[in-house]
Image (cartoon, rainbow, N blue to C red; front, top):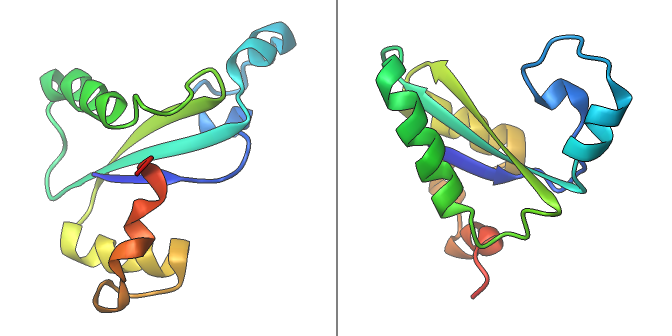
Length: 110
């Protein structure tokens, strides 16, 4: 599981609700900041594990001001080792070997 503070407001397309257009609904749902939790696995995640993984991602991020943040979880079937480097390059423009510890402190309040 990778958890990222996207440092941007959430948008409708961040949620898997298709073309749901009720503006009153979106005004209540969208927050000032988006945190994504992405679960990668070599095999599809079992249906009965999805709820537990969702709850785990929320427990890791429960220190955030959830009135101002959306936490969205997504599942992918991909190699974890290959994904780690591609995600780090995409998000932070670094590889795993170049990752300094202080780059991981963004989600903590220490």
